[in-house]
Amino acid sequence: MSKGYCSALLIGAVALIHMGLAQAGAIDDAVRRGVLKVGTTPTYMPFEMTDKQGRIVGFEIDLLKVMSQALGVELELVAVPYTELVEGLQAKKFDLIGSGMTVTQERNIKLNFSDSFIVVGQSVLLHPSLMGKVTSVEDLDDASYRIATTEGTTGDAAARRFLGAARLSSFATPEEGVRQVVQGKADAFVHDAPYNLIALSRPENSALLALEQPFTFEPLAFGLKKGDFDSLNWINHFLNQVAQDGTYDRLHDKWFKETAWMAEID
Image 1 (cartoon, rainbow, N blue to C red):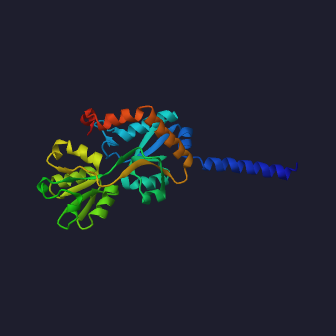
Image 2 (cartoon, helix red, strand yellow):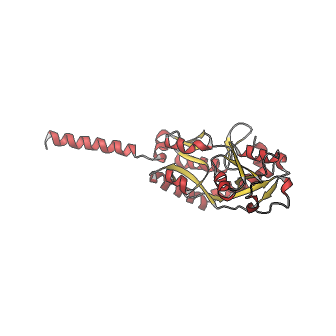
């Protein structure tokens, strides 16, 4: 065998090794470094939020903790504004997005999504002055109504789609959107149903009314970089496993049926 041929084989082998490393997915990277980095926006009760000790907690966070344990790695949460999640993932600031993100066709062009871990929908909170005047979301599609949403969310997109005739304003956090209605600066707030139901339980929001029936169908999932099919495969099998062994039901009941956690939220 000639030296030139040996050199060619060696160069080819090195190239294949580097190619394999370059194509390693988020899960492989997390295992290699011993840390799973997840981008999240902790303003979405009960999925991800900040407690009185400044810790990020919630249903999705608990799922991610179990995921990290299954991988044998630590969990590192990287808090960023919701509108910066996709950009942060693409810039490799974290391995995946775990932030109550709805799977949409527009987002799916930029991301790959895991199987959905829960399905929610948009609902509406109303100012008490609208009692008897507004009985459906269609009633709000009028220029006389002021609608508040959260910037960059599917609630914002749904309001623009279904309530185009109304006067729409988006805010950085859902808390600010609800506050606009409480203070009479907006007539209604559009956001995911689980958040709105919990917001109603807070004393400062108790006077608000609710159109409780969701008017959209929205699956939530983990977001990964395009082409990271190995990581998608692992996460989908993980979601199936926790659904079968009772872990998912236990966490779901903790955050959606029990209320003890509310006393710990800032």
